[in-house]
Length: 180
Image (tube, rainbow, N blue to C red; front, side, top):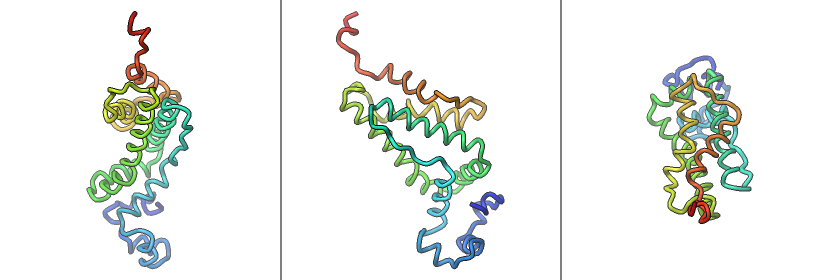
């Protein structure tokens, strides 16, 4: 993290240089990480907000917590030169991006899909809803504002607004409401 904060480009980071900076042998680093990619992904994870505990009270509540965490990560990447720099460099290195995607992004996506699946089983979500699409509908607005529109606000309450707006179209329609 120190080397990245000093602006050392990812391409110039080697296990040897990292070990020298920390004052340990390369073997010490290889005992914990199989290579630069895994170490780098762990550094990024340490700089990001921690994963949230889900309340488990309802699909809505869990989705709000997950989107709030995503909103905070968006704010962190805007305010942290380290994270901003790291994300940009990761995308230019296919191996590191693939490792990050596999170890960070995919588990987060699976978590949202699990919450949606549970919501469908509990009757909080219509049975015909495509869960992959629903995931994108919930997560998409935060990602758009975080990555594609860096000038857009990521205000408090955004997670609730997104969840409630999307759920309004995905909840089961009661039989009495359908008759009117």
